[in-house]
View 1 (tube, helix red, strand yellow):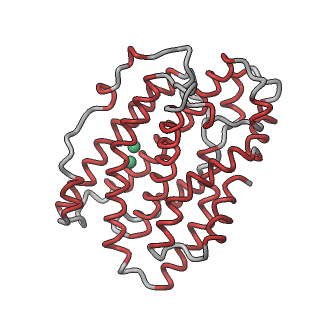
View 2 (cartoon, helix red, strand yellow):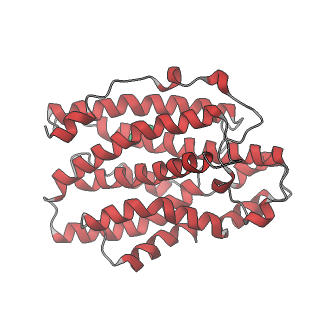
View 3 (cartoon, protein in one colour):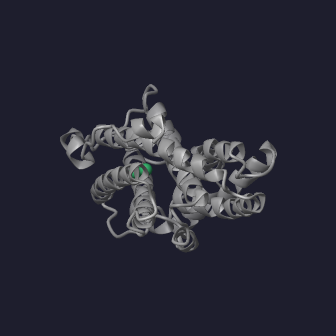
Length: 295
Ligand SMILES: [Fe+2]
Ligand SMILES: [Fe+2]
């Protein structure tokens, strides 16, 4: 096992639901800082009452939780489906630690969705094609770990930005939301490092044709992924008392602030894919790919 994987496998396990101080909840505070919230442009948003902003922040946070649940479910399903027969014990150990941590994250996310009052509400956009593709990836292949890397990097970049903005003056968020973001980020930093390690040992086996095919597939799927996970659904906006939630959801898809945020969340993963030879094109092409998530 590499020294990096060894380090990844030695962190002590903490159960997320037990680690969060749920009694620290402050109902007056939003769950995300204002700079992470954008619906139909910041000007229109400035008209929202403080109470609506808090409820909107819960919708946005719950969507992040739903994205986590979905991605974690796919990871657990694909990593465990072969019973680890083809994995070394070192790799199987890392993967099982991730399965344990992702299950804990998912339970924590379910609690937040419940607390947001959004249980059973469709929070993500269209995920059918992405789920179909994920179920055809093999955890023994570079493509699988590249997709894991992208999924985890995009959602973690969102969380890191939220934590950074929450430290700005006047942007305090509910302590429970902050703890959830911090705990998840701490674990995800290791998961992302593991995905990178798994990817790097597999990528050398990819032929140039396979890399080109992956690049085209990633380009095709990335916009769908960003649309599914970084934009609110009409159903999730229904509880905010907006006159036309469908129209608000459509406006969010063209909102410049939200487009910029989606681009920024995708950028680190895209840079790494380019460096790994799994995404072709110059920087301008990368931006175009990221931009597809907002159209
Ligand atoms: Fe997670
Ligand atoms: Fe993860």
